[in-house]
Image (cartoon, rainbow, N blue to C red):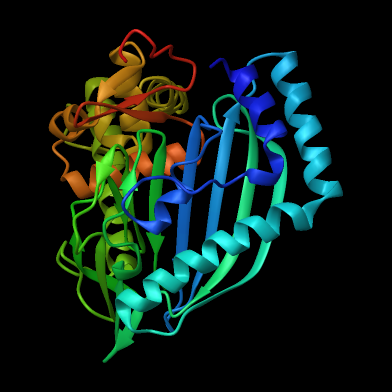
Length: 347
């Protein structure tokens, strides 16, 4: 079905936005639905008490005027009949929470369901229908830990769907299974197509604990990185001055500074063509993309820059959140592209 057809179908089945499917887990209704959006982004912000603030965003590409008009009609209908949408979504999620409650033994509830529709830009324009709700006792708590994921056991993510789990900044991840596609100090993201096992997904976050990456304090690490950057910049300028004839004079005197013109030229050259070791992590990834025609495998980024998989996922995840890159999968490989690169030939 064309994007226009999907949007028209979305408007026509407005009162049946989420339809139960034959997938294994009850929660799969969020990822498997009749209207086939281009992207589904599910995010759970888990609080220290175990409750979670959920966001489920359905994104549909607006490729032409017909798509845009269809989405605007849908948005008008949502704004005029919000309760129709929230009631059906809320009923479905309450049934989902009841199933999870039976499986985990924790009393659960779904509350404060809301819906919005608006146009957003992620490299290109999308119509986005976003549901938000609170899920009480979503995660298990105890002894300074959060155990997240048992309410989603066996979840299936199709190729258009991602799941992000976040935890408070005072916690650090001790165990994460399966290996996520992206991770930061306070979140992990899995992208489909993926079938979680009966005990997956699973995140154990420890209050004030050490992460799997070694537990370095982010502030200490940040200060160290800034210091290394300053030292590298100083060394580069010193080499430039020596190359331009600076340094000790022939009479043994110490020439402490280069001429004003020499400093200006060196600064201009450094600004227009900085070496890789003076670029930020994000700039290094973008330069690699430019050198590779706007597309590169995520594993190749890690190899080229000699980064760990976790660091690579974190940097690319930040670029994607800022709309500076896009990602997709070919088989089990993550591929990174610039937003304006056509990837249809790679799929």
